[in-house]
Amino acid sequence: MQDANIRSKLASLARQHGLNVTGGKIRRTSSRFCFGVEHGDYNGTELFGVGTDRFIWLAYRPNDSGRIRLFSDNFPGDGIIDFTPGKVPSAKTVTDSWARFAYGASFILHRAGFPVTHGFDAVLHSNIPGGGMSRSASLTLNLILTFLEVNGTPVKDDMQIIDLAQAVENDYIGSPCGKLDQIMIYFAKAGTGTHYNPKTLAINYIPLGKGAIDFRIVSLDTGTVRPGLEKSTYKIRRAECDELAKLAGLTCLADVRDENLYRQIISRFPVLAPRLNYIYHAQHRFQKMLTAWKAGNLEEVGAIFRRDGVGLRDDYQISGPELETMCDIARTVSGVLGERMLGGGDKGAAGALVRADAVEELRNAVQIGYPRSHPEFAGKFAMHVCSLVDGVTVLPGL
Image (tube, rainbow, N blue to C red):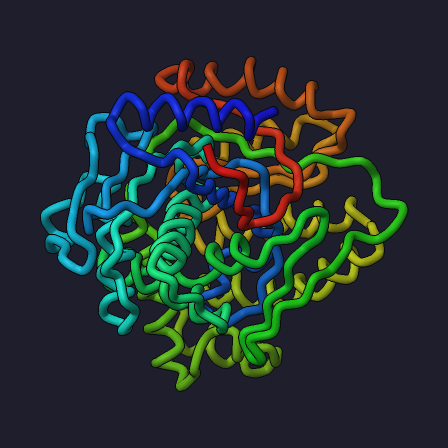
């Protein structure tokens, strides 16, 4: 039903703006929910997460004009983005427009030697909340895959897709993101968790163990607007972790798994020690979390998720007051198994693992408690109840 409604919306948008996508395709890319290790990707840790059913839908069809023409329903003020593939403006001139992602996809593919000569028309719609569920990674992957398909250049190495998508944000937009978001979206499979090992580049799918309670993943959107990662605390934390690794003679902080080495480093570098505190303990919790997931022990998964949240708040210091208010409210509901901030930090959304029969109690608690603490966001916050889905799906066109 959701896809059908969106199909009608996209068709209407295309007619309104003179874009011809009839007979083309619709690519749907998901959001993501990371169970661990949040902020672990650029520190070299293993990762585990799922795709969630908040999406970006992109309806597209090749055209004969030799130009890229796109319109986003979420940013109507930007109008139609119209440019020649391979010829894009400097990112510095489009800092306040979603167009920088389309330009960036074209720029990175051209730089990597992929032919980006064919034009296409496209219209987009998204219901991914801003901040915490990886809307930018979902958009970037969608655009990269669309450019490649339209130009008839499939990529056999899936990890190259991840690298290209990361490069759009790192090298064109200037956002210092890692690969967590792209990996968790691109490889996501419905009903299962995705495990990534950076040492081997292996992707493994881990089904939830039999006998697990009925549960929901919930995104608690604070209604705040989070700046890009390049303008946030994320950039500072990444620089601090890189600095500590360099001072300690490490490749990355994930190399610290031995307690003696851990204690030596935190005693030598007390100012940066809290960052290692989080990564070190999160790595040790990670294996316990995987074991609990395999056993269907969601109570333990939730408890570890909650402890990660405390570490992100106190040691990594990447959370924010509105995010922590959502977490404080969630903890008052007995059916909430665990909660913490999501994504880049500062603003955006918190997340919770919730028993299915406790979702409405959580909704009521948030609706009452959050606007009392933050009345300035009374009309802006939202709660999204999510399921586990495939990360990338191509649907019939319009």
